[in-house]
Length: 446
Image (tube, rainbow, N blue to C red; front, side, top):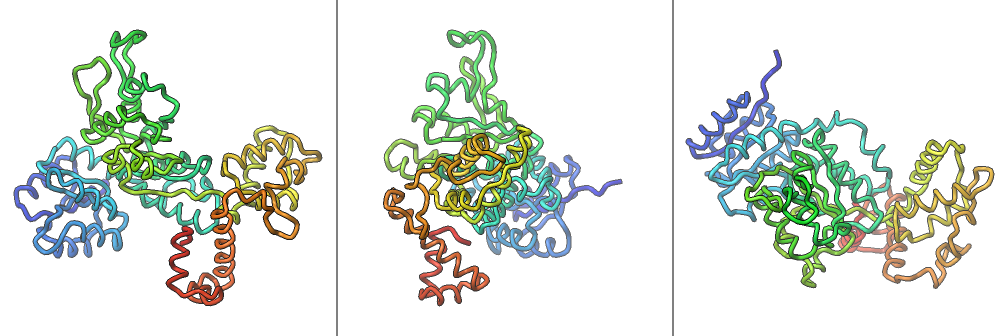
């Protein structure tokens, strides 16, 4: 006989505690109840819980403090925050602090049961399939940080805005976040918002009924329905026209959609992840993107570093890509010459990992004797490095980027030479510790 899963209920109102105890009991969960933060901490210190539901306002503190305590001491326990109706700011703060999800009062029992079912499906991070290192290659500090963030954010239901340049791997990050989370057995539906004609957008997202417009010869489900129970990934979300942004905002807020030609709304349960290579905040400032939608989508931002910020991963990436090419074509393994690797290390890669893949595929096809030489890469002198290691003037199409790359290289070298002792590295570079900390933050070096 298996042990029943256990939930901790934290609320100072007896009738709310009783309602939650009865509802969770019917879901075959054992429950423990606490009236305040102190009692909750005492329960957490003596028992292990599969879920915690906590009110925001408690007699001796806040649910936010409890979320932070559980994040630090019991990170495997998902926490859902119960907030007053309309307290969106509070809910967003809870999600940013690490809450799994939130509920609003008065409690919707159907929504509560759905939330509990999702929370209890969160996979154990120690046993969640293939390690991320095999899927998201790179041992550079930015990539190690990114993998840690993916694992942490996968457990949450918070909307995530994945920012990064074209070709940097935003869809892969979104897919990994889905696979590491409680929705991993449900659909992952990616959609390129810039590839859907504006006149078909509402039908594509929400579906349509037969006869609702010319050409609608049968009922069709939309992307929201296709992703039910899973994750909807909105790539290039900045390309959505303003009228569609209004409809998307409503669907996210109401957790329901109405198919074109239908009089009834259908409840949908999806987690929204979005991405764009554009600066979404700048798009809001320019009036191209609704601020209220930006606020809902950008609860937490996850930045994917461009390839030029993790050049030390170049050897690992090229080895993996060439191995894949060899396996897919059966033409034998190719080797990258040291001169070719040097040339790749100097290139800015505006197209990032996607551009590197295309470049290697072309070079793999053109090379002789399975040896990829520098000339096989078809890079001009302007896009490589001079023999003395200095960039040619033609290569510098963005002075700030170039200076930033030099700064990053020197800081990384100092950190590696001092075994990541930041104080010692700052001294070696002639910087104050405060100045060093500012530069690390600016460059995204953790």
